[in-house]
Length: 163
Image (tube, rainbow, N blue to C red):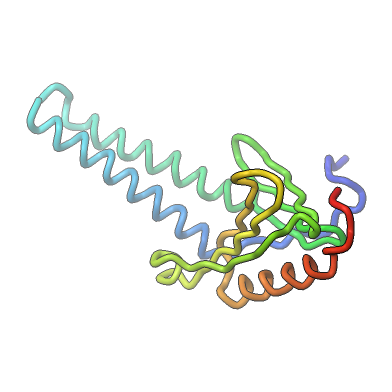
């Protein structure tokens, strides 16, 4: 038996390139941590040489596995009343943002995202500080389409009460 609500539909998945980007970020973190330990150990000589390499490899394995699991856990769907998001590996989060709570929607592309051919859609909500949600790992066209769709649905719902 599934723990999803009976009215759930198929969630939209992120572009697979975001998984590669997240794995690459883990590899960079592993190289920095392993390299940093190696450099410190060259000066202080307190650890056997394989220890920094082992720590770097462990960070790479754990970070890479978490990146793959994070990609599998991420999904979103535009429903009749709002946008629904599922994400999280260690702490699973399910969020519904009613259209009536949406203040504005942005598409953004940082330098690394541009290099990977990806974009992020950011949904800013009314009510409290930091109450915005992001949908990363979209193609630029998909991010723009999602932004325009959410904008239109938010404008149409302006006269309704918040949930």
